[in-house]
Length: 143
Image 1 (cartoon, one colour):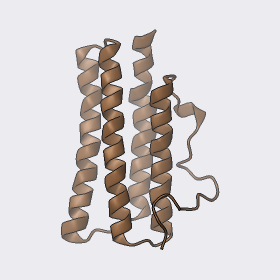
Image 2 (cartoon, rainbow, N blue to C red):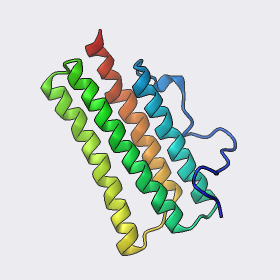
Image 3 (tube, helix red, strand yellow):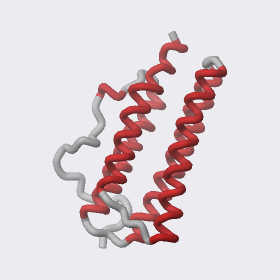
């Protein structure tokens, strides 16, 4: 059985970090990179056929880290004076993702839903879309 943090990362995949995802704010970029690494690690657990308990535990850690990242990002946005409407739209996306992830964990517990590559595709798709479409707008307010 693998332990958290011991997944082999293998060849490059669709969820690898690319410089195109940089928003130009070092602290946020570092957190985004960590999120990509965590998704990659979860995928490794799925591919290795790890127990549901290991994957559920890791997904909960991913949710916690995501919430910390969102809190940091939102604090930064407030500090630089992002307009209220833009801030609210941005934070609504954050809340929606966290809600979806918590619902997934709940479904796993009540319906014995399994962890599949579709979860990874969803997470990576959401991250890429949110970073490129929404987070990159933050830098506009810095300039």
